[in-house]
Length: 189
Image 1 (cartoon, rainbow, N blue to C red):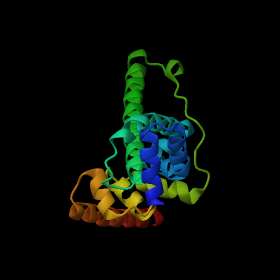
Image 2 (image 1 turned 180 degrees about the horizontal axis):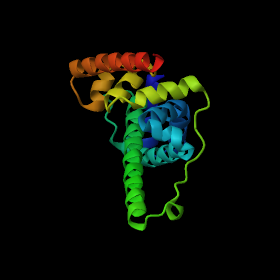
Image 3 (image 1 turned 90 degrees about the vertical axis):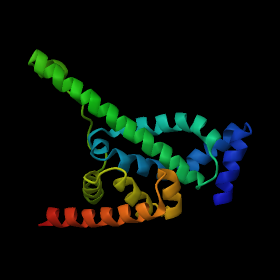
Image 4 (image 1 turned 120 degrees about the horizontal axis):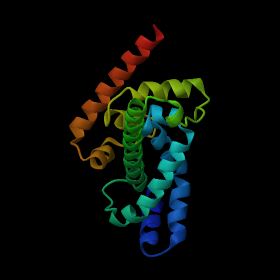
């Protein structure tokens, strides 16, 4: 499977567009999950945000895969690109929200600047609860914990992806687990 992914990247870089499509389709679910977790509560508020993030990530991957060096698995590299797109989208959304709030203060009317909030993206209450809890963790702890525990990405690959030492990755994941436990406990009581 790993060699297949690397071969697909090489084949695509050599000019075969079908290899890129096969690589994206093969890891579509992973990329969607990473986008949801990285976007946090914004994913719950706006169901179209995840599709926008994934579309942006696919466009970025067209260029980024040419620079793939093989220091981690292609799926991990792709997940990193999706994570960066999600964080960019969240920052863009926050800037947009700030502008809206300033406009409401200036014009003193909410009617002109209503927010378009879509229905909740996640219907399963447990998934929504987990995403809400995860969204309370800081970045990159949230992404490290999710990628390690839910996606099974190796610590060595996380270290390469986030460009931080292996020991730091281990301690961040450990602290993130403890914070998540405390948040779950507080929410339950």
